[in-house]
Image (cartoon, rainbow, N blue to C red; front, side, top):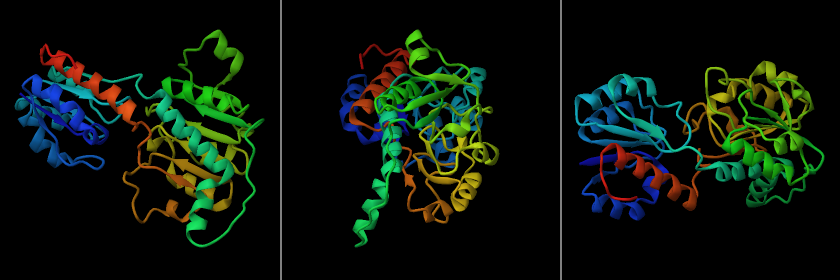
Length: 314
């Protein structure tokens, strides 16, 4: 049997997992992947393998149909987000598939908090200026007493709220499907978006990408925000309408943004976002810690082995 892995973080630690596959008699197909493989590359590879551990690739119906016509028996979406995977097509084709939820709450939340801290104190901007030979001292913002509009209250959102609360920040949560405890009700305010959005000093997105959340942060919602708002997105790029964000940055309505994800990844070289020095940019890398990758990869392997009816323990 063969299993294709196209998830860059898992590939980065593959040496740790290879013995598990070898014990099960499975050959691992590990192409070089920076972010995703193209549809053409996947159409060539997927039909040749029995299982596919998917990263952020666009796992389309066309690819799954090609896989089904070949050897493909099962798939696992590595990580939490599933917006890039056509689960409906898998169901129709009889290809069993799951993701690996509840793996990276704290990991992605720490990235969100690092962006909030970096934007508040402009530490990344200062670092770049010092490297350029300048000695700048911009006035920062204290976190205590300031308000965060937190969009999404799943595993990542809850961890983000908990961490930011430790800085004595006020947390307004926007999530119509939030599962909340009495403790949550006491610690945070739960509102309907965009209610009281104008009170937020930071807008932080940790929600899933759905038709309802695509471009939730847009020209209209940005206009409702406080002048000088700071925007953080560690969820999915299309949550933020980048054209609207650019206009907000140009006008000064938006002070700065911390973006771990973008509408097009990698961020195009001609993106105007690169012109704003106070912004912080990531590489869709929020979940990538040694410990987090280990947890999610073992879960992905366990799920794959169950689908392929392999008795080896991951």
